[in-house]
Image (cartoon, rainbow, N blue to C red; front, side):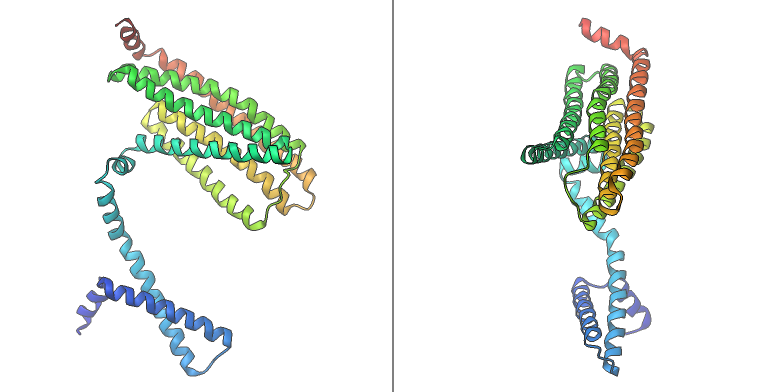
Length: 310
């Protein structure tokens, strides 16, 4: 086989050849591990090592090069169905769908902490369960309010815009109610040590997920501001508040797991971070109330009055 044809074949191989290469790579890598464990150092072992390295490199190349093709095929299949097509093409629909998923998770967290509080007679878990109940109620209220606003607007874009601004301001007010539950939770975090021990692996895993959650929330808050949609901003601001609380809860876990002088350092760090989280929630609520009131004084208010008179 000529070099050019060989390169073309290796660059875009058939699926049967790929499967054979992947199986061979797994076998040679496993064989290399066995030789290292047995401390076998004769010349055949070097052939196995070289083959394992070459096959592993080529396997990684084929996997990376196949990502665009796999992605294209998945997108083509996803666009055949209304739900998955909307998830891909509509940022607004995707935001609402993820908010529904977050609502389900809030209910799950509330039930988990509530059961833990009842079983262990722990006020700590009880107040955390109350916080997630309030958070879930806020998310659910915005989702229901959005649905009703769209239904009441009757397809009138300007009327729907006014309803969304009202919900945006209402969400800011609700954040102050959520702040009461959050302040109580932070107070308990400062006064009491969390009644559950965690392993280092669980703490590190939780840290990775929490930082992803925080980064994802911040990026989406910035992205949704460009869209100028009050309803989407409601969901993203709630996610940002939730991510900040998760960061505080993670801090409690990390200090409890990795700190020797737990109580003193725990109280100091929780007091500082708790104050920042509470202040962030208050600031977000104030901004939403002020902006919502300012937007309601705009042009769309007349459309709502006209719709009400009809």
